[in-house]
Length: 247
Ligand SMILES: Nc1nc2c(ncn2[C@@H]2O[C@H](COP(=O)(O)OP(=O)(O)O)[C@@H](O)[C@H]2O)c(=O)[nH]1
Ligand SMILES: [Mg+2]
Image 1: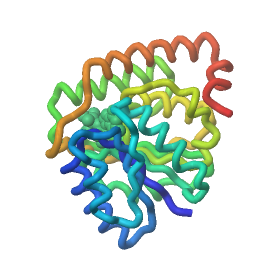
Image 2 (image 1 turned 90 degrees about the vertical axis):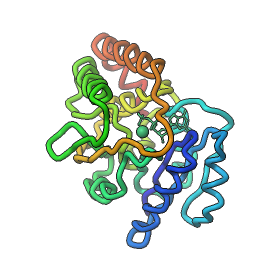
Image 3 (image 1 turned 180 degrees about the horizontal axis):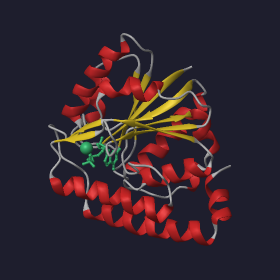
């Protein structure tokens, strides 16, 4: 059993080549597969990945841009039935999640039900080249989610994570609805409800050099209202919440 890395892309034709080149170096010493989750990027990200001809990389081609959460759920539904992966990694395409941090993330725990969270906002973690405004948004987003949901984690919105396949199989992924980046909050919440071992690993998050961010006001608003609704749901009907997320 080996891990698989899921990488969502929308117009990441330059960044994904750099990332796959760095992952190739790591691949010399560790076995893993990569599945790129592409939403029919107009810049031909999917074709460019295929043209690299890496045997351990495949592309899941999706018809249109449908948000990060939808891309990851399609990725989980694609890899889990294969039953050949021990762990599923989620990682941005734009170089913000460093390949150098990946071995520490992968080796952090072998607990059967586990989520490892790459964490910027803890001792040893950091961000490089992010404007103060983005840092504030990320820190206050995590703080709000931590209070609203009562989850004692330091980085609830980060996307660099490792899930044990057993944990993902225990979750009702088809019941999840978050389309944007609040997908990360929803997954942390569901993992906690499933009784997962939760491990935080400090990471250095480096702002992208290539391409542009897909973060938008709509994504922030979705995260805010979803987190507020989830917060009420957890307080008012905690058992219903567990039934909703855990098989
Ligand atoms: N497939 C897919 N990937 C997306 C979508 N939105 C964002 N991504 C990818 O998600 C990752 C994080 O997005 P990014 O724009 O870097 O967000 P930021 O780091 O918060 O500014 C990148 O690899 C994006 O290409 C989407 O709608 N569909
Ligand atoms: Mg980014």
